[in-house]
Length: 166
Image 1 (tube, rainbow, N blue to C red):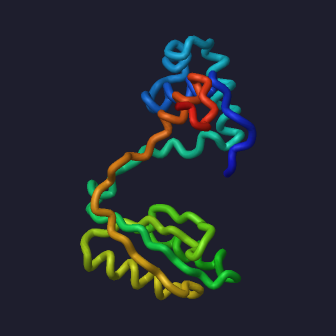
Image 2 (cartoon, helix red, strand yellow):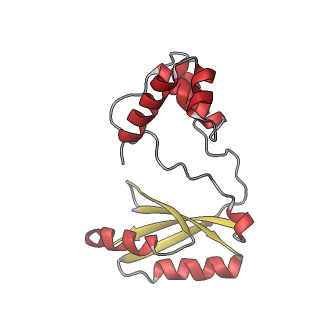
């Protein structure tokens, strides 16, 4: 779901507190950001309704589940079959997420695998999907920046516009 409307500095402070302490209670968040419990509860509810806050699913390291390899597969798709291809990719457990792209490739597929042979199997499964014309697989050698939102929230809190703040 796409979020509608902007997040203000107060919402950003609340989201940053939630980012830093995802298990925090509403009362603890209220104390941390200096708002009443009711205000925090109402703002969190509005953020959820607007789609700003999505799943509270914690990020799990796939390596801990036996999937130490990460790869990104670019996929070219027969355009009229995009919906069917997306549904097929959704049924592959090793597919972590799929992004639709503009440009020469249509999809960016984030996959995990147990080892090189498993990655070969998964890549073959993607290529064999009806509507997939071509794939290119790139193995992740190292993660250099973890998924994060804190810098954007901090910029919003400080009044930054997101354009060349210097």
